[in-house]
Length: 369
Ligand code: PEP
Ligand code: MN
Image (tube, rainbow, N blue to C red; front, side, top):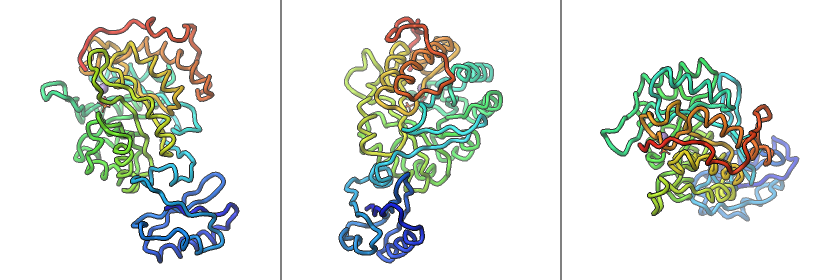
């Protein structure tokens, strides 16, 4: 339930209203918007009568019942205003959100060695990325496939962070590793396969690090938002949702189906920032630029792109990774779209290659998703 306070109400009156609400056995959580304050009511609100609450104070404009199962993640909870996630990186603060420039994240699927991660970090930074991604702990379908280098790879990410000042995004798969991952990561990634690992969600909810929550392989939008709700309910408000493709019937020509409809749908349901990962979403480097452009037009706040110095030799996800040169060109191309929607950081150069020319990017043929 949301209690909307009339504009211009004094803080003292808002506090007094919160006090009253506490006596109704609910926890009031003030949400300060640009123009107005609202109070989210947490707890068992089913028995509460909105009309009775309305009469508590003349400063209450209206009382709204949130009928959705997710509360803190709902757009109503923020009284219709988008939230932003501010991440501190050595190069400065970076903000994810609907009213901010699109944030680019790039890097290899897995951290393989120092040379490749530092080289990749330097190149993606020069091309305009604000974050380096790279897995130390890899969720692989086969137990015989490369599982990531683990803790030593975290040290390599720290080296790349120091060399470039880029923020680090890396996945945690196990609660036992959370502390050491959080030491290096500026944003912790919860992968698709762990979207409903509730003990992991509660643990990342209990720390204050920003979290990228990837959509589960076959998760509905509601299940995904309920997973976000776990993190928010545990006390961490810094959640970014990442659409990374879902399982549909066609596995012949694409690895997953990138559900770009999810972007406007999420916009209508939640205040949380939205990221799109067209690399896992398509599984093929050839289609990544087109779907990244489409994601920007759909309204994504951030893009996550897999990039590798030698995709053919990558230890994981080579077939969907752009080479360093391809990423450079990719960033110039998507800058055109980013600028068209007035959401591109000013400093990056524009492409000389015409739009829609993703086939001009020669792609790797290795297939090891
Ligand atoms: C990844 O980012 O490399 C990854 C494994 O992602 P997902 O969880 O979306 O499959
Ligand atoms: Mn990957």
